[in-house]
Image 1 (cartoon, rainbow, N blue to C red):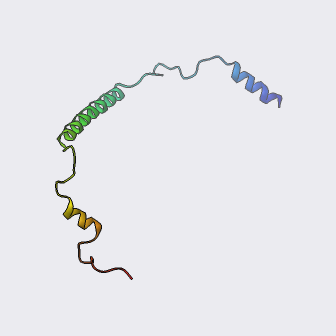
Image 2: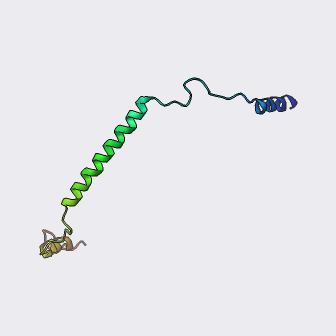
Image 3: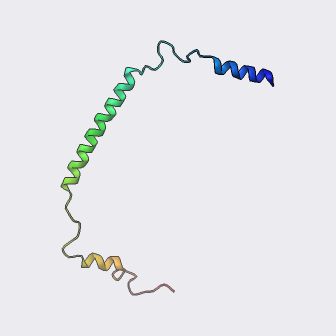
Length: 85
């Protein structure tokens, strides 16, 4: 038990910095290139999406919705006059 406490105290008292090699904390230029390319791609995707959204009509309502509504209600079609048993 005392050996464990001494070992823990020694680890806590150790003030040597860890992971401080010459390359610690440095990002590679390749990672920066990937981030920049992703940001450029995102910019162009948002720009394209905005162009497509501007081309959409303000409303998709038709001037004469009755023929479509009849099909949606199930009143027109091969099984319009039959009911399921």
